Image (cartoon, rainbow, N blue to C red; front, side, top):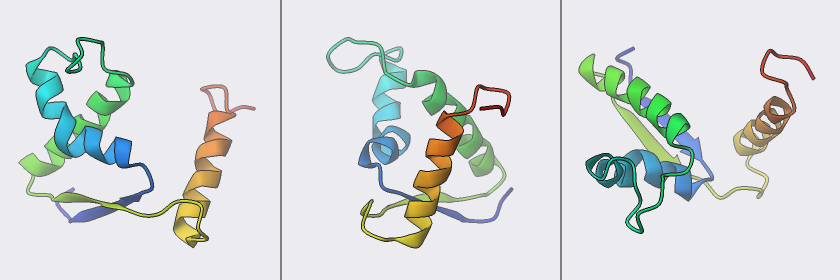
Amino acid sequence: MNRPVLIHSDSKYAISCLTQWFQKWRANNWKTAGGKEVENRDIVEKVLKVIEKRVERGGKTRFQWVNGHTGNVGNEAADQLANEGARLDGVGRR
């Protein structure tokens, strides 16, 4: 779990959540600058937990933004898998 990882994403929102905004959100008890509850907090916290565990073990996690829906094979495949996963019922069935 200490190998370097580079995560490609077409979501600037997701990258910013995990690299910048979470620090202020934590300090503000998971409230945005406008005082609202952070959306997708549960997901952000789960991913941060994995990243922080990697850091404890000497692993580095980096993010790279890629332009989505422009024919990038890896991005298109990830998008297709995400859409298929969203159609599942939580136990792997459609």
